Structure formats: C-alpha cells, structure tokens
Length: 449
Image (cartoon, rainbow, N blue to C red; front, side, top):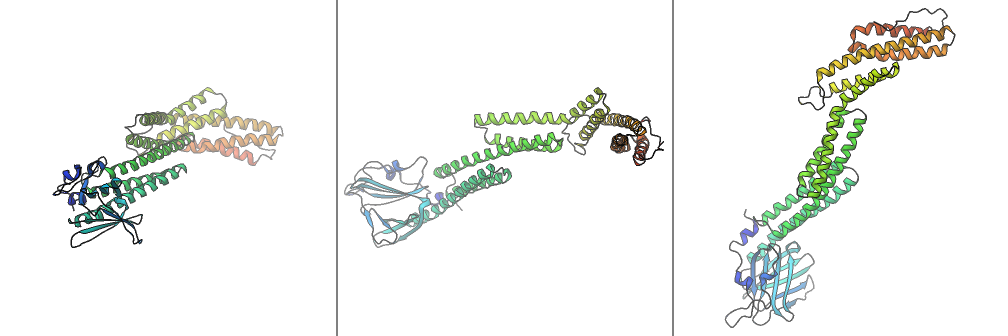
C-alpha cells in the first residue's frame, strides 16, 4: 500500500495558488492580500491538497452550540483550505482584520465529514477541543476528506507512540534512581521500540518522511539517549562496585564478570554518544580505568600467591608461616582453576609453572605444620609433666588443629606424607583423651618424614 501523502498528492499542489497574492478581477479570482499561502508553511512542511472558495470563507462553531461564526474573504479575494503533511491550514484573504488564518494540527483532528450540495459541497472538521470548522467548496472534496481522515490517524498513532516512549523514559529514570538498572534498561528498550514504531507510522504518511514528525521523534530520541546514558553509566558503576567487592573476597571469576559487564555498558554508551566530544571523553576515561583494573585483576591470583609465598619464607614464626603458605596454596590453586576448561584464558600465569608452585607450597605447608605440631606437643608434655593440665591441653589442641587442617592437603597433594601426618594427628588426639592419666607415654612423631 502506497504511503498516504504519495497517494493523495501525485502531482503536487499548484504553485501559482501557493505563491499568488493580490485581488482578482471580473474574470479571475484573487489570492491573499499580504503574504502568499506559501509563507504560512513551516520549514520542510509539504502541502498535499488545496481547496478554495471565493465568497463563503470558513465557518466556526462549538460542538452542540447551534451557532456558527462565518469568516468571509474581502471582495476579490479567496479563502483557502490547505492540507499539509502536518496540519489543516485555513487562510481567508482580506477580512475586516486583514488576512486571517487558523491552523489545526492533524493530531487534533477527530472527525472529518462532508456533504454534497447543488452548487457547492462542504467538509467539516471536528477537533479534540470540540471545535468545528466548515469549509464550502465547488471542487471535489472527497480527496481532502479522505486524506485528512487517514493522515490524522497516522499522526495520532505517532503521538501515541511518542507518549508511550516519554512515559518509558520517566520510568527508566525512576528505576535508575532506585538502582534497578536491568529494569531501567528494559524501559529504555521499550522507549526505543516506541520511537521505532513512530517512524514506521511516519513512513506510512510519506516514503520520504515528514519533517514535523521527524523533529518530534528526534526530540524524544534525545530524551531516550539521555536516559540510556544515565542507566548505562549507573549500571556500570554498580558493576564496578561489585567487581571490587568480589576482588577483595578473592572471588576473581565473579570480579572479572562484573568488570566485563561494566566494560560492555561503557562501550555501548560510548558508541551511542561518539558524536558528543565531552561525553565521549568522559566515557573513554572510565573505559580505560576498567581495562586497567581488569589487567591488574588478571595478574592478581598469581601475584597474591607469590607475595604470600615470599612472606612465608621471610618469617621464622611457624604459625605465621603456615598461614601464609596456606593462603599462597589457596591462591595458586585458584589461579589454576579459574580458567579450567575454558578455550580462552582470562587470568595470567603458565599452568605448568603454577602446578609446580602448588606442589612446592603444599610440601612446605605440610612440613611447617608438622614442625609446629611437634613443638606444641613438646610444650604440652612439659606442662603435663608439671601438672599444668589446662596449658597442656591448649598446646595439644593447637597441635591437633594444625594437623587436622593438614591431613587433607597431604592426602590430595603430598600423598607420600599422608600416613605420617594422619598418625601424627591420631597420636595428638590420643594425648588429649588421656590427658588426665598420670601414666601417659604415647610416643609423638617428631614431625619429620
């Protein structure tokens, strides 16, 4: 089906009627007195259908009033009814107050009717404000009536879509302020869908578009882009907060995903605002910061493991050394597992080198914890022999806790030491059970293999 304007205006409107001024003579009709009809047209406004009369002018009444005001042209001048792509324009030449005009936007046209008479026909437009305009004409009014009816429906559809888009923008801003970013983005997408639908209605009016419709849509699209930018930046900032929280907790994969979400949002915002230099610069700065953080995050698991391993080597305190080694082991294993089964690696570190580090740290951890347990048992034996059973129990308990935490590491990573660690743990447990006995000679491993 051809667009409405293209269907009703295949040859355009007579330019002489649009551009003529002056009074008519005996054998010719006049135009307007001051400015030609074309002067009333807005920028880009397209005239579609023109009708005129020489004496009747235009009638105006309120719906249901029964009274009609008539505005007639001066002697030798005419009244014009011009339907454009945006409105119905009525201009009456040389009235008592000079040239007179009224503009009825197509969005305000509710009903269009016409009647046929012996000498002239008349079309009647009823507006949303319950105002009626009557225009008599000897020419064929059917095209005018059909066009106004069809075009007004398309314009009303455009405005309905734009109203829905504006409502969606308001909702998006409300949701963004409430930090409901995903829901806000859904509202933004809804608004974008409404402007797309408005553009489809515009194309139903004219295959070349309608300037007035395009301007309305563009203004709403600017509001949508503003809401979109606010939502994307808000969600990106929220994702960065989540990433930093996950990072602090050692949840590297979740941190990486959150940074990735922030990166995607900033990239979308930058693509949509590349033409705004200030906004684009701000977004690039934020995007660069995310990329630096991601690079640091991808180094973090191995770096934190290496730092903890180094601290363990530097301390002579066996408890502190054991804790640092346990932390280093956890970080190395995390680094090894983060990209397990993934075709593309995200985190830095050679898997083979990390496996060697896991083996080395695990052995050091088992040895450190057994040495610590042996020292605790020795102190516990001294306190037990001196009758200080509470202190002895505390030392035995420290030894037992250290060994219990080490049994699983030995079994999984240093299997050749597992039996010795388990025996050592059982011996300490036996000491705890028999602490009240005065004849306790249970041997305890020295902690060496």
